[in-house]
View 1 (cartoon, rainbow, N blue to C red):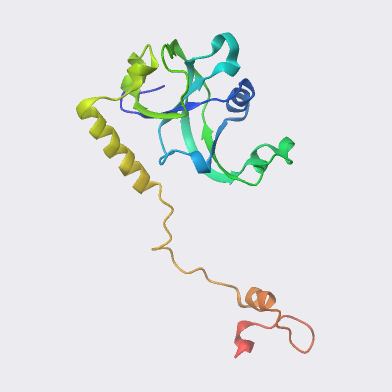
View 2: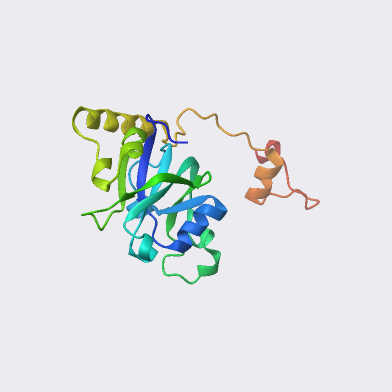
Length: 190
């Protein structure tokens, strides 16, 4: 369940098929080239555009974020191997079960939306998309929280230990064999 302090990413759910992926497979995709700066949030809220027919122009569902990884569109949608963007990178955001809001948040004036950051407090009391926009002093707190999340989710390699390579594997990679045709050990490389 959403708590008032949760960091929420409101995102576009392009089609009902994408909603099925979220509901049945537990993931949501975001193209890397158009992704927001921070995807390490507590929950996603899904805005439904015109492709949802009578249920368009509203947010009905939210889901807890359980993690994310970088992959390709082709890996996510294997039945679309010939798609022009099959080799492009996408975030695969793992999510929990979809939760239906007690009342939908409607778009009123807004018709186009890709991403919007908000908080659980704003989401729980909103009746329109305008109500999700964080105002005044709280906006500075939201951006501070986003910066902290961005720093926490950076992929750091600066303090990792050097991996130890097995000498036989190293010899195999270098293609060094002894007189009997077996791969030599690193001791034989001198």
